[in-house]
Length: 227
Image (cartoon, rainbow, N blue to C red):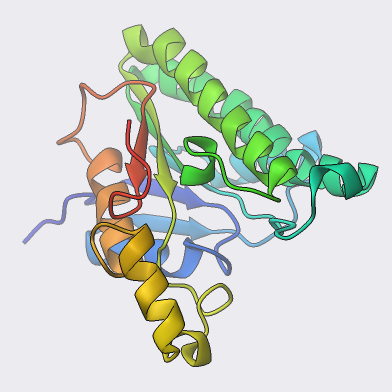
């Protein structure tokens, strides 16, 4: 039986981090040929080289992570800490998109799915640099999404928060009653989302089933952020 991405060529960036491993797994289950790339994408040349080496790219999954500098008041934010999220998440998104779009436009078919953050949609204290970079991703996706929609290329973003991750939510934290109570207060769904749930939403956005969603930032946060 054919999968939802049968014979599609998908590039997943930072494949070893963040949503990379589960996305690679889910997309391969659905028949995709996944280029799981783990190189540093901190220069235009690195981004262009990845796309050039990948050949035909039906789907680009921009999985770009950065330290969130949580706990740093804006008055104490160092210049380097301000620039780093933009260097790791905003500039590479543009370079990758700029490199892959010409072939998608020529074929009149293509998907770009960006893993972003719900901190772009709802204010959160002491994460100014991270939130600003994530908001820049949203603005970029909105603008590029409507620009390329007439070419039958869809660009969308998943604005996520409260998704299971051992770095953010280690087992010892999950076992604390105070955290469980806080989770229920903060997240209407009362739990963390699972990486597979997240990846399944990305799968829908990357599939041929989805052709009428354009330049959107979809909250994926159990109700913590809404639009």
